[in-house]
Image 1 (tube, rainbow, N blue to C red):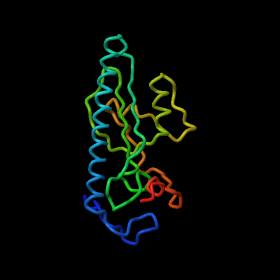
Image 2: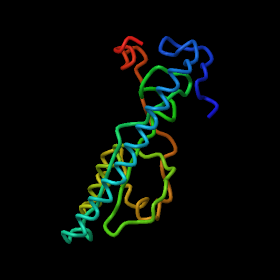
Image 3: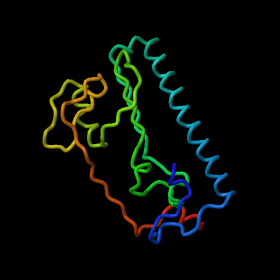
Image 4: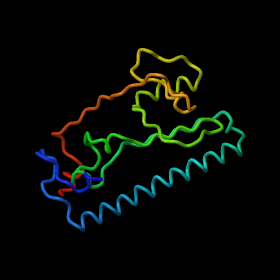
Length: 171
């Protein structure tokens, strides 16, 4: 990734002005390995939940939904901040939806937001979509028949003045 440990042009107050040192990068790489191990543990957890659902006879009626907190960066743009920037890698998150009986695993590139979960759960429960809300159901994506039209953008906000986790550590 060309943004790895690269100083951004015209940095703001929350950007680093020097690249990470070798020891800082090693620590970030170890943290990245830890994040990978955590993701693998989620995969094992979902497998275990699925096995228990099969054993208990609930697999044919139970949806499994897992939502991660948010994305994160490791050394992209040589940023100190932990996870709260408007860069793409910080705004993406893990969302796993496994319907009863499962589907073929895949990655979806559509722009979805947490506000979509409400109408997703409504559809799963057999209720009609609440059109007074911004979110739309994701069930069509899960079943492999994405809707004909879908959002191309998403609004996000970012407070550049607030303290960060790194600021609190004093680094």
